[in-house]
Amino acid sequence: MLMTEPVKIGNKMAEAITPLSGEVFGALINLSGRRRFTSQRLVLYALLAAQGEAQAAAVAHEALGLFRGAHIALVNGDAKLPGIFCPELQDAYFGSMEGDRKILAFIALAERTLHAIEGGSSDAATHLAQLVRLTTPILDVLNRITTIYEEQSKRHALLMKKQLRGVISDIETIAKQAKMVAFNARIVAARAGHAGREFAVVAGVLSTITGEIDAMVSAALNAA
Image 1 (cartoon, rainbow, N blue to C red):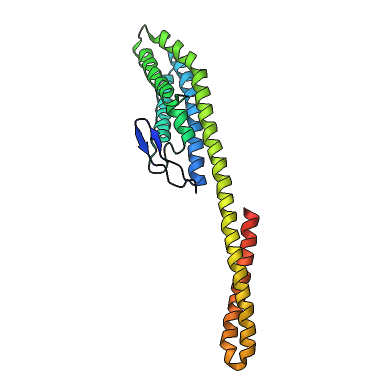
Image 2: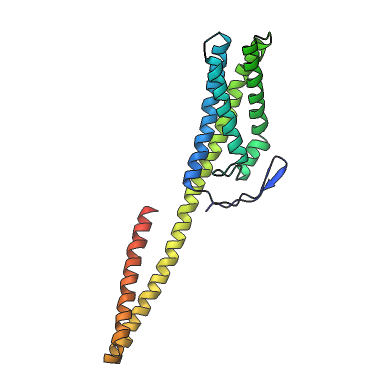
């Protein structure tokens, strides 16, 4: 399990101690990738809308909605996602990279640009030029944050494998002890003769169980 220390999200402290599954990491990486894709789609269709392309503004608004929704889910979390769960993401969003501030500024500029284009405002060209200039810097931020999610996923996978091997090692130790008990039990049962027959049956069952444990351990090791 991936257990993290409490981190500060905005002005609040959040205890991110929930274990994250591979499925959750996949969802986080996909959402982060969606932000990258929709940021580019948003700018492209804003340009097309400014040129009078039919339905371009609607597509741009849709892309903006997806972009905003992905960002909110990644930062605040929801029923399925943890939000910011590690110091690296905390720093990326609210620390040195200022990712949250830059992404929110991009969203606000995109909204102003689309409203200006749709309203035929004289500021439309200025806003659009600013949005285009911001495209590369915001993409760099999004790429760097996506890399953090990918790195955390790899770290999680390695941790899971290490913990699995630790559990398997403990099981192997218990199985060896059980084998010794079964061996000693057979000796005692043999010495007891007829009176030890039931004891011998128990020892046999214990030997069978330890054999099954060996098979499961071997399969788990091959999968780890």
